[in-house]
View 1 (cartoon, protein in one colour):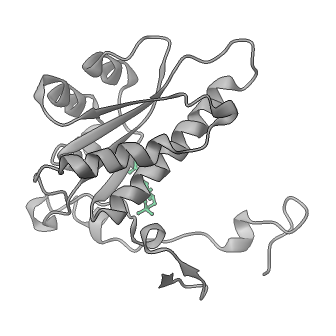
View 2 (spheres, rainbow, N blue to C red):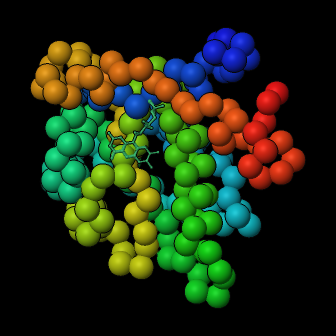
Length: 195
Ligand SMILES: Cc1cc2nc3c(=O)[nH]c(=O)nc-3n(C[C@H](O)[C@H](O)[C@H](O)COP(=O)(O)O)c2cc1C
């Protein structure tokens, strides 16, 4: 347990998870990758539909193509991570309103499970939304009617000094959150939670 700023204890993994940019190229052990998959697999989903379609990419030409699909500001550090996990959903159901949004949400739960398990395994993570959907789909062969949700870099922590100087502050920045009362309400939407 870790005591947070509010004086509340949280499990280590929630507090330790942080979007890092310094990754070591050391491969991740197979048993740890299996634990990541298992964690994501046990996420909740609407109607237990399990709409996640999760592709783990370690190397090869599809990995090189994925690196090229990332926004330049992400590629510069993300290309060093030994594992890229592409989180996608199956096709939305046209009969169900908000189907695409609900599927995205389910995939997000799976992603958070995987990040927390990775942290538990001594790994570091960083999710990104900065990529070109067409290029990501082409890189790994995602069907046209599926949606790519986010990419997750996973690996052991690396040396921030190996990165270009302008990227390093992303690793060392203070991690901040808005005040509780700005986002959490007591009984009525907009009535700040005061504890
Ligand atoms: C869906 C999603 C997309 C994100 N996209 C990017 C991105 O393209 N580039 C980046 O550097 N960080 C990205 N991030 C990381 C956020 O900037 C980061 O989670 C936020 O600043 C909070 O920091 P923390 O994760 O260390 O707590 C993304 C995070 C999420 C959940």
